[in-house]
Structure formats: C-alpha cells, structure tokens
Length: 118
Length: 118
Length: 118
Length: 118
Image (cartoon, rainbow over all chains, first blue to last red; front, side, top):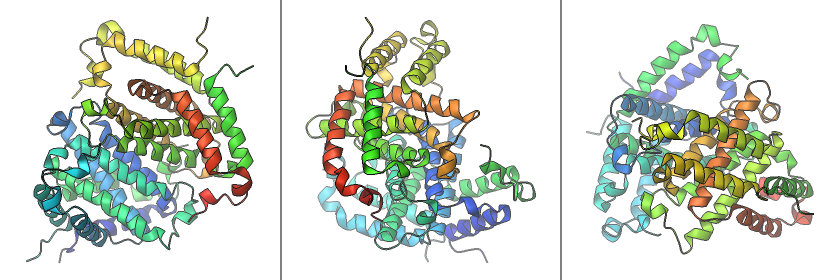
C-alpha cells in the first residue's frame, strides 16, 4: 500500500538516507536552515536578471535546472521540519486558513491591497 | 474522495486562493522566488544567534512561530512550482535517487566527506 | 585627524561597540553570515512585489526604511570581514580588476552576454 | 588627489564599469537586491556545515574564496545604494548611533539580552 502522504513519504526516505550515511550529526536546525537558504538562492539566481515575463517562460536547459533546485528546497524543508518535529502539512493547512481570514477575497479582490502598500 | 497527494491538494488550494483574489498577476516566478527567500530568512532569523544544540531544542513561543515560517515556505514553494509547471514530488524523488548515486552510503559513511571538505 | 578610510572607521567603531557590550562571543563568522543574510532579506522584502521600474522610484516612508536596511547590511559586512581578517577595500578593488578582465567592455557592450545567457 | 572616501571611490568605479558596458539597464534595485542576496548565499555556503569555531578558523583555499565573496557583496551593495541615491556611510553612521541608544552598554553588557530572548 502506498504511503498516503507525499510529505511523510519524503520524510521517511530522508531519515533513512541520513541514517545510512551517519549525517544526522550535521543536521541541526541551524545548519539545515542555512542549507535551505543556499538552495533558494541557487533557484533565485536563475531569475535575477530576467524580467518577470521572462521568468514565466523559461525553457531549454534552464527548466530542468530549476526543477532540481525546487527539489532541493523541498528536501531540505522536509528534513528541517522533521528535525523540529513540525507536521508540515498540518502547519500549511493552518496557515492557509489564517491567510483566508486575513485577506477576505471580497475585500482585497481588485485592490490587491497587500501588494500595493507602497 | 480526498486528493491522494498532499502537494497537489495544497497546489489546488493555492490556485483557488490566488484566483479568488486576482493575485495571479503578482505571482511571476521571479517575484515568488523573492517571497520564498524572504520567508526562509524569517525562519533563519530564529536560529542566527543560537548554538546548534539550542536550535534543536526550541520551545515556548518560538516553536509555533517556527512552524508558521515552515508553512509559509512550503506554500510559496508549492505555488512557485505550479507557476513553473514543475511536479514537485516527481522532482524530489528524482533528486533523491541522484543523491543516493552521488553519495554511496558505504563510501561516505563515517568519513562524511561531503561535510569535511574544508 | 580623521581616519582616511570609511571602511576602517566603521570597522573600528564596530569593534568598540561589540567590546563595550561583550558581544564578541556571538560574532562567529557563521552567525554573522546569517545575520547579514537576514538583513539582505529585509531589504529585498521591500522590492518583492514591485516592478523593476517601481523599485527605482521608491519614496515616502519606504526610502528611509530602505536606507536603514542598507546600513545594517554594510555594518554586518564590515564586522564579518573584520572577524575573518579580510581587508574589504583591497578585496573589492581586486575583484573589480578581475571583473574588468572577465568582461571586456568592447566585447560585452550591447550584447550584454552575461545577462542574456537564458 | 585621491578620493577621501573608500565608498565613494568604489561607487564611481562601479558607475564607470556599468556605463562602459551598457549594463545600467539591468541594474534596477529589484534586480540588484537579488544579486546581492545570491552573493551572500555564496558566502554563507562556506559556513553552513562548519561549527562556529571552525568558521572562525578557515584557511587554505577557503580564505581567498571567502574574501572574494565579501568583495562581491560590497560591490553590489555600493551599486545598489547608488541606484537608490542613498549615502551609505551617512546611513551607517546614523544606524550606529541608533543602535548605541537602543542597546546601552551598561545595561546589556553581560546579559546580552538581545541574544538571549529565546
């Protein structure tokens, strides 16, 4: 029977990966947050000199490179959440509800106030 | 029937959320990568002056604050992958296989060469 | 006689500041690099939803807030360089020469190849 | 007569550099803030798996690589401040005074409250 949760499946695979290599010792939340940041920067580097429109139309060799950076980010994020004993899915669903209450669609639609404070 | 995939469920919720608020116009990959970075920095800020050991033992008010940052990161990551038309789970599983081949357990175990190049 | 170098003057002020507060113990290069990163993210946050053109025309309350973030970045950068015993000005001048050799004006002008690899 | 200010000298050199290559068009504050971030991440990458003590004792090939990242950060910072018409030195001195008022030495010394809120 397949694992019903993507995120828990990845968590378990990453646990096994680190254990097999005795890498748990390096995986403090402090270090993992730095590694996560470095991966996000490697992703952002692809977009830094592109226009917004260009960033929405990458292709060629950039597309798979970007996909790999997204994967690295997810893997470190799942690992970090695991070391902090945080249920990522539960936290994300909770935050979505909070955001829905904070930005009621009927009020922010069109005005997009969140994005136009400047 | 519930969506069998956490990540696809979050993707669909985020799509509906942005559509209901007409926020899609702000969600270029370039902008989303910046927003993702800002969230990771807000997470890292909790750890910057802590020792590695302290970072593994947060509690009190810090724990829920950190969980919320992890949620923000996952939400922006899922949204960004969607806008780039990347299947996050597939990309992550592919990267895990690549890492397994790059760091064979029997060779790196103990030496942890990846972490001791300096 | 005033110190002839901005960067050395700032370095000396920061040394005295940390010493008077006994904060040197927190200022490992690892920690300072995280603090530097957090400040850059706080700067970037001002620009994340702006168009490029908007980012070049900030004003009102945003301008002094951005100036303060730039100051924070410079202060942590100077402090970090000091802890690593790196002469910032010398390193910057050296890098400028390296860049001039790497991107000869007559070759890259117009084509701006560095920015159009994608 | 040499320019009495390191930062203004670097600013002028960077202006000439960009002009000679027609790169001004790419240097929106939004883009430059991303480039700055990417350089800070490249610096942080050197420290991510090191202990704090190790980060204070880098040597060999790492030292010049770290010096070059610090240079890149300073160069992008100076360029960004110029495009935003911010006087970096003035902003830094102003922030130092603000910090001195916020953290009186006699009160924070020893307790280092700023660093022990968690």
